[in-house]
Amino acid sequence: MADRYLSFTGTAPGRFLSRRLGLPQPAALRRWSPQRPSLDGALLRLTAGKSGLDPDLASVLGRTGLEVAEAVPAASAGALGVAAVVLDASGVRDVDGLGEVHAALHPVVRSVAASGRVVVLGAPLDAGDHHQAAAQQALEGFTRSLGKEIGRGRTVNLVRLTDASAAESTLRFLLSPRSAYVSGQVIHVGADAPTAPTVPTAPGDWDRPLAGRTALVTGGARGIGEAVAETLARDGAHVVVLDVPAAEADARRVAERLSGTALPLDITAADAGERIAAALPDGLDVLIHNAGITRDRRLVNMPAERWGSVLEVNLASVLRTTDALLASGALRRGGRIVATASIAGLAGNAGQTNYGASKAGVAGMVRALAPRALAEYGVTVNAVAPGFIETKMTAAVPLFIREAGRRMNSLAQGGLPVDVAETTAWLAHPASGAVNGQVVRVCGQSLLGA
Image (tube, rainbow, N blue to C red; front, top):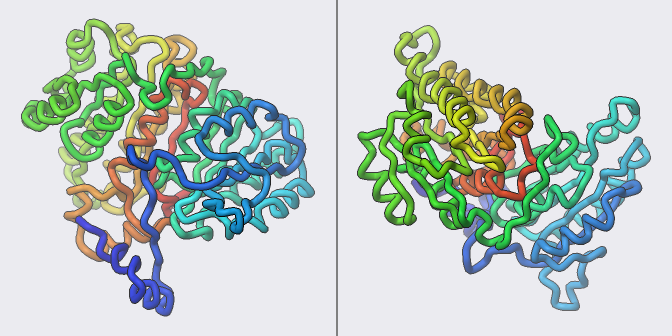
């Protein structure tokens, strides 16, 4: 369903009226397309504190496709302006260093173009230095607050890292149109992740990083799952579209369009993992747990069947299938598992105790399994947590609840299935081996929860 309010506020009368009434003023987001794969303008690199990331950071930023500058380009020179700002605050160790953060960003925030990016680089918290830990923790409150005020479709995120080269896939993602609906996130890369990361594998072709790899998407016949399948296929993967037998026709339609394979299968079957392994004798590189259902009702009115069916599809099947594919070796070393959580599992939602429990369970699985899966199987485990995404399901939500869902985030609009898909593709990337145990919200920085 089209967001008519977003369209209206894009007109001159709409902008005037929304300002006068103090209403949200969403900006049309710039998303990836083959015609415009990169942001337009310069990448402004700034530093607060003494950086320990040089020269790797300079090399990585130079490969983003954006022209790196150390000052705001002069408008008189015909420059496109500032597409993104990267502030290296990894060396900030005290309150004085936080003053440098303000001094660096205060003069340039207005120069960031619409749908631009601000990425702050931080360091892991030093448990032996409470001054450093306080200063670095302060960066989280700073970036989340800036994300809520910066407006015009711009996003702000914090990346904690010790090695810039290990974060190349993450920085490329955050500094591109692919991350349009990801804001206010804290992403840990490398030493600050749950366990020592694998060495990131740079793809031969950054435009098709999954070439030669096989990816399975559960619930891939429609909605977010279909968008994930399309995006992984765009990135070169052979995609296996798994969905329930009742959706076989849709699964085959998607698979044929993507030159992939359809796999009609009930993911809740006790032997689903074994049947997937048998259907993929050459193995699997990327496992996307997307299948999910809702059976909403307040707890006092919720029968056991509604509770059990949601927990079975959304959580129990994820646990069983993951265990089976890891134990059988069907998921090859260097593989990626990306599960779908939800902000309903992180912040809660009235009428969704079953759904919220299942999605919080997914997040718990990711955080606990990630260190062991990497150590024993060479596989990373992460999750995406969508917020309000424009799908057929949300289109059926009553008008006022739907509008509240759309506006209650820093970007003041709903996301699209492709926003979840792009984030999933980043986590599935062969160069994302240093990102492990993360639950990344794709919610436009929802005002609900952290």
